[in-house]
Image (cartoon, rainbow, N blue to C red; front, side, top):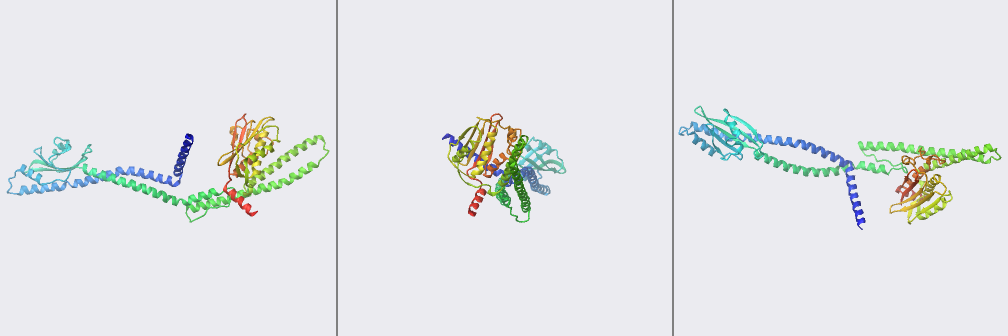
Length: 500
């Protein structure tokens, strides 16, 4: 039970990974991820610029906010000088006007008399502009009205904006008025607003990303339809074409694909017709020559050997023609005549047939019962091809095994020998037509098409051929077939039954 649970967990994990891999392989996902990456780069570059612009605008507005209290002081100062009833007590005037002017938040009115701090409103000053600060020394050095900004390293202060106004009485300088503002509050509000805006933007961006993912999927639906239609086109049916809708890029793609399929279908048809015609045309002279050779009697001994060579070559050519015609027929829908096959009975009958081929140590293994939908004649021919290869490259008394193995989805027919084996570099090419390899598998009296026919029969059933071999240790050829062939084979076989 623990092993089963572990296997189920691994299977679920594999399914989840496959789902994620499939999502990330989709074109729309890749496009949206690319757009998202570009948006992130643009946003990362624009946010600092945006904050600098916001802070600059905040500083400009705060700077303008310093002018009203300064103007109020100037008017009060002018009225005090022109008031004949006043006793012209300068310190009393300064104290009174500081009381009358109510600065806004983070604004500070500071009075310096005779180069010394006198009073301020509010009374408590931040250390950065307090008594003895560097900024204070800078202000006291001004002899004319000034405005400016001082950037501090203290995040609780921000920038210090200021306006200065020298104070004179009877043409003599008596002091200095400073209207200062600390920008921490405005900057913090701007940052808070930016954070709220960023959260809203991220939410909107995620919603837009999801909506765009579905919208892009709908826009790319014709492309998926093209892919589905293209996958449904096979060697068995080259007549299917892609639907052409509209006049855009997708329509042009469909038209180009259809033109390619027309050329491909024409090439396949021409090739098949040529092989059929050549095969049938070659059969006639071969048959005539064989017939005349068989009529020859009482020939001299020196000619008998030549006749045997010619006869062997004619037989080989005849097999080659038959193999060519068989391969040409593989591409036709009626290549397979499907029926239900009892696997154990099939392998037992095959074992009975091949025991007479040569003096070998024949073994058969069929531990399981099962059924397969396939063409028994084609499968028999493929297995006989593999067995003949095993006979050809083994010696009398060597072991040749055949057997089957069945699971829920497929059946395996295998042939194992203890012959010379096949080099790893040749194993991928040995199933090709007339392939030249170092192994003697292609250096014998065979036509060079036997293993190609085996692969063609397996693929016609929707399966494949697997080769396991090592030089000096023999080879194992395995036909791996689904329990049911491809749907197009089943549909064609059903149509053929109805016609019959």
